[in-house]
Image 1 (spheres, rainbow, N blue to C red):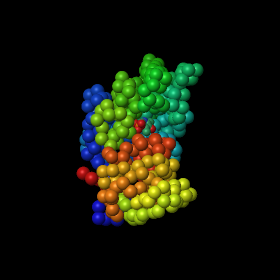
Image 2 (cartoon, helix red, strand yellow; image 1 turned 135 degrees about the horizontal axis):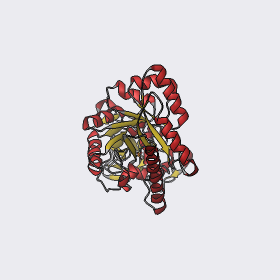
Image 3 (tube, rainbow, N blue to C red; image 1 turned 60 degrees about the vertical axis):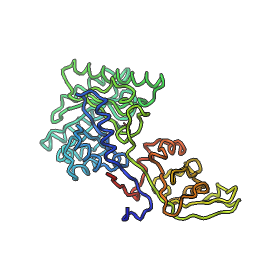
Image 4 (spheres, rainbow, N blue to C red; image 1 turned 90 degrees about the horizontal axis):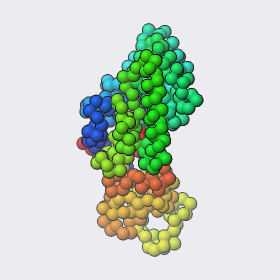
Length: 374
Ligand SMILES: *Cc1c(COP(=O)(O)O)cnc(C)c1O
């Protein structure tokens, strides 16, 4: 780690991601395809590295959020199918075609625009139709009174020229919750999804890939895996509640840069929100909110240092924060501090900050070098 100034870094284990991939693969039916979600720089793990490893392992598909993310992967030599989950303005259909990207289509009006653009370019755009079955985000409306119109719009999309409708999918709102109400809601979404597909197929269209299972559904609703699963969180080692034996792929590490002793009644950091009660051996850790440490977690979380737990004290600053090393005599300047990883669970840090682990992974900033440890 000599070129990293030994400040703060994020260790990423691609072997753990491969382990998670193989574990999930073993859990899904043999004929079910695997789409790896690598949006948002693969949840902070590095989209190019993760995509290349998944490609090598034999994953079937990748998905990212937007065109730029897809082009980055193509430029780095990733050749496997890539689905864009978000919207791409029809002005960029040339780039979708050139880069052999699959575009999500979320309503009939957009389908018509894509069809027209592809026809003008003399190409055929591969698309997946997205149905809104209850997430109320992107997708063809099809619930309740929208059912017939939804089916009709899906069918007419399938019949547009210069579009190759390869797949149809939907997204769950609460598949990661296992209370009764959430389970019922997910089942209702799934039923609506399959009902729309059946009604459309009765009108003569067909879909090669029907998919809806995100991480929550892979764990809680295995009957919903259909032709392809779409996990993100699981791939990075979280969200299985120990059921599958997944391994977290990222370990965020910082270092102790200074240690000082403070007398009782010394106030610590911005805002003077922490005051020492006794003589305290305080370390300055070289990571702050600009590295991705959540400001909201101040005073509510402990890091792992030399095999012990070091409580964080006072407000978190942009580039540093203070940690109490009074009970860790082995800690010295240069000691590693695990911000999250095997010894300091990211779920606990998320709870302390009032957020979700997903946000913390995505928040590990550009300043934090990713170190691939295997
Ligand atoms: C992000 C995303 C996923 C993956 O969700 P996880 O909870 O990380 O498994 C799947 N599908 C869509 C449409 C998404 O946007």
